[in-house]
Length: 85
Image (cartoon, rainbow, N blue to C red):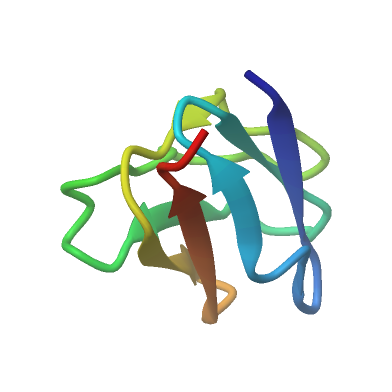
């Protein structure tokens, strides 16, 4: 299992996020506003909850490929999950 960190700033780095099944993703908020990251399926796959400026989200295990939205930054990204070993 590995951890991938996505930085939230004026964009998302990296995007798209490429992970293997079982890897975790952490979002690092480098903006001056509180941000929330949610999958584009009404948060059913994941939601980070509020991420304070200069802070990281809790680690999230993303079970399947999905798009996501960062609010209120208005950014959209993609997590691609490979199920092959």
